[in-house]
Image (cartoon, rainbow over all chains, first blue to last red; front, top):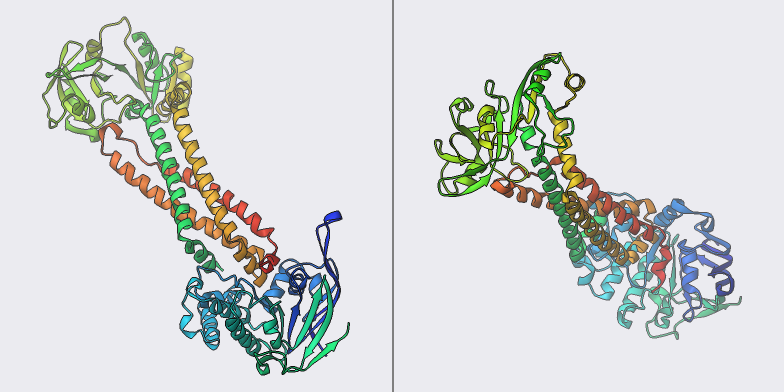
Length: 250
Length: 381
């Protein structure tokens, strides 16, 4: 089985000396293709740090991080940036849309960053927004959109360049339950495909049902991985009763 | 990403307009004050620059500037004429008699006494508005500059034949000319040398300057050296004498300090306001820049975005400021007290360099913050 991302004995420290904080402790994790993997756990357990290390926006202090067959921890400078631009899609907790750009322009940013012409980039982004049910809001500015609509724009921005790995940080935490559920349905239906992988950091247990795999973290460690047999579009919004879980002991 | 950079810049309308205003205000103040300063300094040289017939000015070797002269002797004139390479050398008198109009209006005037025979030193023909330079050959005749005429005959149309008292001598206006504004905004009058010294009052020596024309092929610098060697007088080109006069005023008056303070304040205000606003603008967008970095925008592209934003506000602000300065000077140009004060291209170029440098510096501070920003910041709620 090939993996979109593999972590081997990954460690991450913040600070030094007496003020040093160990955020990740010998983390081993595999993110398979074609699945939605959730990193879950209490606040401060290191799940966002692990996501940042996998996404190449934070350097690990120790261990190995392989993403899409590339040792991302050995990439640096513009090579790392280009790797992220080409292969990764990002969804942030606070959306981080540029307020001066329309929805379509925001969604087109990865294409613009890759040097593609503006018109074709925006057209492509608008097309994707239409697929996400936003066809009548492509020219709206973020301030004119609801939270759920802004997150859809953020999804479009993350998917527009067809990345092989999508990383999402708390994508539903700024949304109400119903909108969060809709957003996760969109994510599961558009992002989870063969040859692609999605990692979602969340502590929102209402969306666990969309995960194919749930990695639980505590105090900088992976404490267990649960494989979800009934997930994604097949999952029921009502709870876990329709799920068959398989605990992987670590 | 240039499009994104410009949209980010103009998206925050309040800060964008603040930046433009700060830069436009600084530009206007810098161009305005530096051009007025240059104009005032140029005014100190008006009587020198208005003499276009002669190339060399000869004076007492202790002369510092045009407004304080020690009279030469007639013998000095003849000695200058004897210097090899001199085509001709003529007298020039400069004095300040008091002129009084029939209604009692009076002004101290700058009286230029030009050579009786050749009239060298008189206004050039293209500067004559009414009358002719040749009319100076009439007895008790003067040519007055247009602004001076308006000072002495306020509200009255330009007309020849009017009379004035010059230190109790009755003179008649035979010509009205356009003359460069003098430093102290005195009216400027021209008369023949023999009459001018009579108007001012007799002293033992009254020859202010000798105006010299070199023979063809003789360099001005060489002739000046020869005159100084043969006569022990000071001889300089008109241009050099003008600069000597400017430097005198720069060194010995508070004018440059006064203008310098205003220019300094304009630079500081421009730098601080524009720099601070631009810095705050960037800092407030830090999270967005972080998101762009995470998504895959390189540091080079982000530096390019920030510099493009800086150059854009600098160019727009500078253009608006220069436009306002241009309107200001186009208005003042037609007022007699401020005539001759113009927006110089040299000042515009200098201000452009200063403004772009200030904005560039401000943007560098912002760039530093963005470059040291870890893209992981976007994952921190």
